[in-house]
Length: 448
Image (cartoon, rainbow, N blue to C red; front, side, top):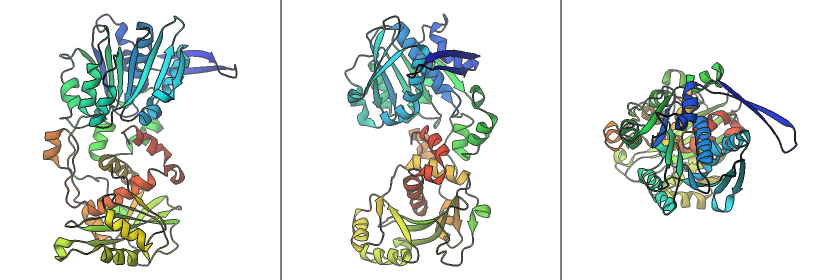
């Protein structure tokens, strides 16, 4: 079904917009007007990425809130306020104009004021549900409704507090998310018990987004393998199991490099993971503008347990300096917990720039896995420890099943951690300069 409407821009030039909505999207938009569903306490939409659930949920939430209430407060929640502004608030502004509403932003208190031609004026406050402390931010406010975008990325305490704020008669909760593990609280509390909770549950697949071309569907299909493919493309709530980087193929992604590789690459980087009783691992990565790949071309690896001796920071500095001296290093990223080693490296001026790496484990793994899936990472045959760990770095199925959260086994992970630091600190942040803006935008929907 196509919905079309025109409005005047600031330049007073007519603009036409057309949205094509699938039956599931229309259900998500208008369920509150359906007699058999109007009494539901809320709705939860889950399923594949880019399946059209967010735009439909936002449409429905805005129409319901503005048509039903006047002078009330609502909450607009994302993992962070920044992610909500990027993923939801931008499209929401277009929807507001399309519907003929008026929106005023109040940045100082993270609020938007939306009004319609009937004189209904409501406040919509933005909240970030990033960690356990986030529940304190939403305490005390009385709400007529709440929209929880990517609710599976929020702590349960925040969701509980948001639900507790819905004290206005007729208040409803609107939720959407991509799947996580089968023991996740969103799955066990809301989706598995949607009838008991008096919720409408709508499950989305890529085919439910009529605006998505076959070319775009093929693009999204290539981004992941393993657990993330099952979740983000097939829309399954499944356990993280097996290898973390299952898309790493040593037959096609390992290459021989016998020389020092000087001047072969556009830029050289170092990334390191520091251990005391655990191994210390340092990688040298070269970026090839010709191939668009990030090649791990050298490594340093010291296991105190295997060698039966722990090195001092000064010894590590000497070893890392010897490795780095072979290449024109542009910048280095190190384990942020390695305070003493970082201080020693900076004092010795081993690198022109040394940054604390972003140690967001799960989002870093997701993004690094996407790069592997696209064939953007290769590994030199001399990097034997990285090759070994990539083929053994695994999910902790027992802990994941108990906690409902993805957990990795803390073994065979040291070079993998160093690689993740580089990918999520350098490549993700500077994605546009590497021609990877599309996958970063997509990774942003995963909470990064």
